[in-house]
Length: 456
Ligand code: SF4
Image 1 (cartoon, rainbow, N blue to C red):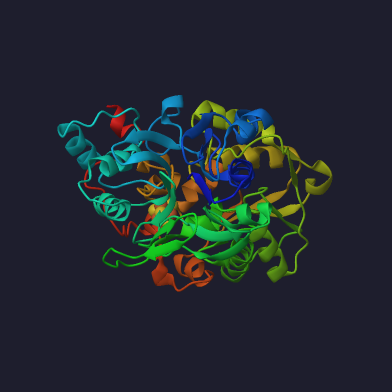
Image 2: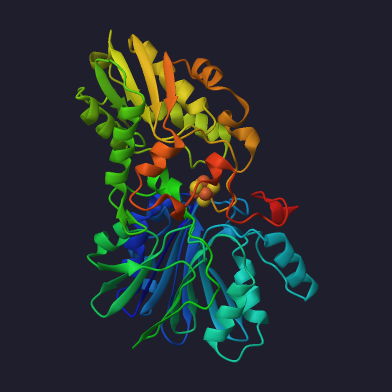
């Protein structure tokens, strides 16, 4: 996870980046940052916290220049610490470099070791910093060749927004794991993780950055290149299931409609006779709409969400997660008492959150609870920038369906089939990464990966 945004050239670059990051806040709540450049110098502000905590009007006004890049962080390599915030900035022999990165490299340890041997001094424990050192170590003559050389060394997942002097650069790895799209507002070009950021600032969507593409945005021209050997596409299917905002188009297709189709497919595979269909809000809402519509069963909100609490899955420690689960959703006794309920959720990671929620539904009087999950069981770690890194943490990797059903405390539990999930997607199934369900990894890490791999 992480949300990235870049704009150039626009007189309100910092303010528009601030708004864009607001729209991308769901991709990372740990830290936020913006860097701008006005042709002579850079202005940087970043800190731990949400966009609304980190920035105010005065700070935004102090970020001068027509070029800006921004980042909201959810850590997947490097702990939650002020030094590990982005955009990461260095002054180097090629000039000012700033990096906003979404994804995880799979050859982090090898590159890190090699660069350290050659004299690189690392300031952070983020894999993203490696890009800065590669750019600085390049012997190539111009910026374009330097970027190509640096990215050619990296394996794994990256969607990047870079600032090198007065050039805004966007890049996506050849598999296209994480999203990145191009938009336009007035004479400015915008690079962003999701189209909801374009909608918020009134920009139009032009197209997705293609896997393996690098785009260079100068003040007066834009240039696109695809210098790397083609690989298969491996768009993260989890963007459609859980991560992306439902009002975004990801990989050029709408998330809301896809989630609804997943719900409809669940109704085909695992219908159930109940009084009402309810989601775990907000994660299960859109699949629940599809499920209820397909079975012609009333859709109700059996739990009301407290909107002043962030998403629980993306809180980094267990204590924080447990606390948030309890205060986030309030069950509605008037809806639930004596009712048979189909409870729709998008996924189960550890199972502890679902268990707590089901307990509160029982306490509110639900007579039967039939849980339906709009993706197959999550069994394998993700090496491409999503934080369920060890098999140990994934309940479905060690337990049977019956065990999980009893642990969560529901009457029945069913997961959507792999085929059903893939058939509900708006793109052909060969385009997707499904490794966390199937262990079919498009690219393997060269050695063990973990969040604190560079802190050992
Ligand atoms: S392993 Fe799963 S979460 Fe990770 S990129 Fe692939 S589909 Fe997405």
